[in-house]
Amino acid sequence: MISKSFTEDAFAERIRECMLELLIERGPGRTICVSEAAQTLAVRIGFHWHDLMRPVRTIAAALSDAGVIEAIQHEEVVDIRVARGPVRIRLRALPGQRSAQRG
Image (cartoon, rainbow, N blue to C red; front, side, top):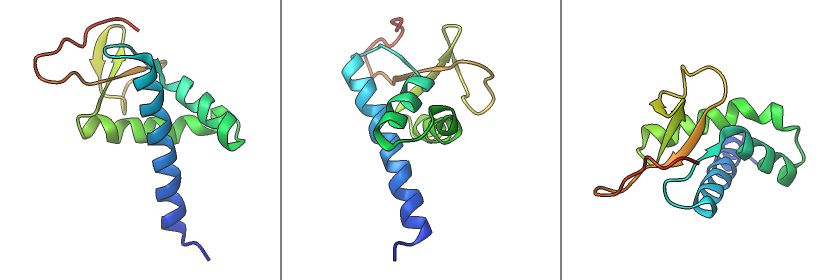
């Protein structure tokens, strides 16, 4: 039997992989909408994408805390935990790189 924590960890990893895959495909400095990640993941695992928005935003917040991504709203970096409405995410720029391109 699979433990609940393993299942949650595996689900979180699936979300992380999906977001990072989409961001890498989009390219440096480019953004994706958080809902794009939810929609892509929904197709892959057979869920309705609206049901995935909260977990996707939670994982995006963790990736932001880890310095992997930035959440963008109205062309400003925001805290995805408090931002209301549509939020885009992008990979954080490496030191010496610009990350301010529009997605």
